Image (cartoon, rainbow, N blue to C red; front, side, top):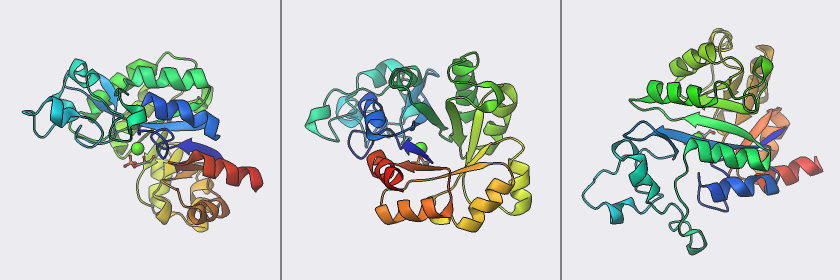
Length: 252
Ligand code: G3P
Ligand code: CA
């Protein structure tokens, strides 16, 4: 059972920062999840929300730029923001990482990457950029789609294109459960399904396994939910508290 640190170890450090990613391995995570979006100048940065409001000081620094959408700021502007103070004073000065920086930290710590391509107007373009960033990287992409990087998205059309275009790229569909017919169709271009944890049942896990896919559930933080998903037979758990899932796995 694979432990995935959601937005890094985001229960303990500001989400989607290098600090949160650096913590993940020490907490027993096998992989870390990051969210990726495109800036105005087409660079890929690690940020969950479509706007910079919640997790940076953009409102104070750029008061005239309402509604502070990531896609309206250049990389150079985003680099000036503080992405840690909202979480606590110990993290003041944390920056919004680029995709390359985030992958660099995960590689240095020796854990895998679950990269979520966020859905917006320019998702196909961001997907093409992401593909270019990893296309010839043997470390991240393995033979037979068994590499250390998994690309997930709610945008299945883009997943399908990228799965065809990037040999070795392992893909995962985010979303709600499917019929048997729907599972067969999606299994043509993804190797994994990642439903919300409340959608997971033992029968659904079996149906997904029958189609040759793996299942990871998100976002699973409460001990009773962790127990239930393990009992249902999922292959991975995406959590803000990797230590809780790793501890449970060690005892099971
Ligand atoms: O890993 C799945 C999960 O991250 C999807 O939801 O909103 O946390 O990106 P969200
Ligand atoms: Ca995510």
